[in-house]
Length: 76
Image 1: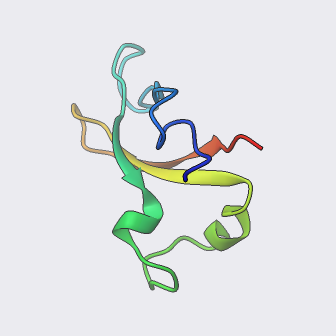
Image 2: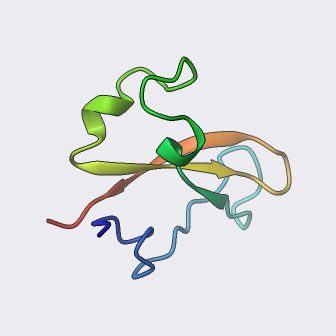
């Protein structure tokens, strides 16, 4: 069972795009681990260190297409 409130559906991700106007919200594409498996050459450095405390979600802006990783604090 996921401890991430976004993965479990108890919280929505409402991260704003840093490149667009203040009203553009990023789309949640799911946990980074779903896109890049453990040990993938595309995994950002340090992601494995955050895995126990945060769930890292890949997000994309529907307007400008920028992508970023958003850390979500997991419930204990």
